[in-house]
Length: 295
Image (cartoon, rainbow, N blue to C red; front, side, top):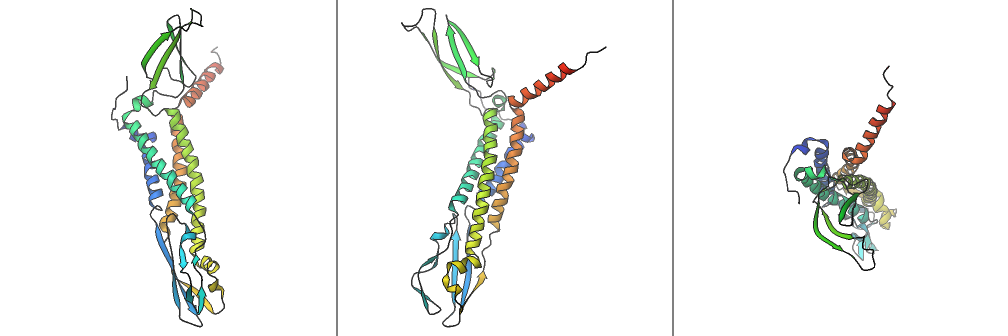
């Protein structure tokens, strides 16, 4: 039978559940601190000839800077006609990858917490691995591979024994439709947790590089290289206002913090798997065998 939901808050007091809650919060802060960002840098053009002008470099998530207009087309600046000019750089792929990983991690943490708090009695007794079913002369044999837990609950909803004419009469084939109980098996949990730790490392590194591109493109040096007018001897470009990118820096910090948190949680999940328990049992067994006999 399908195991029912049993609310149990005890896992929250253990590292397995507590760290999962921590992962949920760090994922929220990671994508929340950069997902809706918008800012602008204001520059002034001091002209020897002609009126001074003010330029605004506005940018926002997902930071496709090459689509942000710095100067409108055919604008007169310092007695010179300047063609339409865009900012340089594109960090959309890195930040969208970062936000995508954060959102998926957020959703996975919610699913994992649901299983921990309501289906821990199934979670502890489950491991993945196919269950092979065969029958000979009406006798049913269930065979599990080495990763399959014999206590895992399966629901048999269809059974049919048939004997095709081309097979020997001594052979009977059994058809089972086996459905696993609703669960998040330990080994899948470990693999997914370790995979997220790796994804956090990759996406945080990519977004850290992408953020540096944004800062360089919207800073004084980036504006000077983008707007050729600023390199003229009779034009001085000065920064009047710089956007606050503290929240973007925080998102990078939370990204790398997630790497540490998810790696730590992967270890605690690993300790619950049969890989760790079998290894510990083997070490204990070898220790007992190597103990000297009493005199």
